[in-house]
Image (cartoon, rainbow, N blue to C red):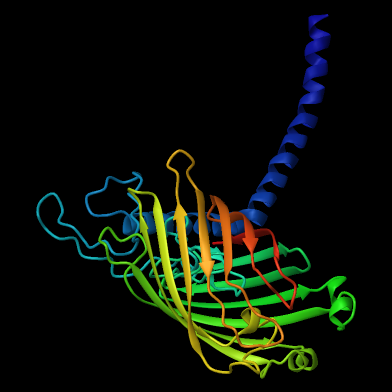
Length: 375
């Protein structure tokens, strides 16, 4: 029996040797076929590893152990070469790492580094400030090296009228602000009583520019933030505007604003002087049969920031108005507001407003709501 098994194994051995030889031959052929590709892959991997090591060494400050995480500062790229442990300054590498240039990014253009609330609210005329008064603030949260932007929607419901306002503001380097707003002033059923048609709508476009002269609202000194501004306004309702005694459908306002926040007291103070000929801030045109000259008007705001509710501002505003038309007298404006800064991207404002007489209808009081978003 043992002899038979040995004889069978001897018969199969040549066949196994032939199959093994054939397998080895195929492996040699595969190795020769893929050898160039494997060599090229190895070269690429080696080159990438060398480049990564070079970039890591160049990015690490002098004296930093390999593989450690470099310290990030607020002003990257400004660090200078420091002396090594032996006291010898390390020279920069002769060749800069081959890395893609990221250029300007959204974080650089809009850095959002200013303190919450320093962008102000959004006024009916589009500029940053209170609801009915312009402040010396610059819209958005961009620092002196960046820009900021904000968008708003406001709704005012009065006794006989409603007004919707949309607009945007952009701040440049915490120095210059440009703004735009559009007012949709709707008369509802009062339009028929005025003889201009049920639901008649007045449209007012306002473009503005503001420049901060000096100071900052958060300076530790008593020096306030002071800014000058100008607005150009266009009313698209020429026929009705002239019918009610207004002289012009286009007009301009200029103003100077002084704003200061006293953090220890939690008090915000603003005083603004405006030169204007606008009738109801321009909704009813500019100038009139009674007066067509510029006269200074006052705008003032007081705000209180309770320390127990961070982000909340409550206050009052007052604004005087010109009397240009015999058709309808104007009343000074007044409001009481509460504004909450959820974060730098969302602000919610609600107010009670008293706007007096508008187009012969007295006691125009109601609610004001505004949403502002930006960065």
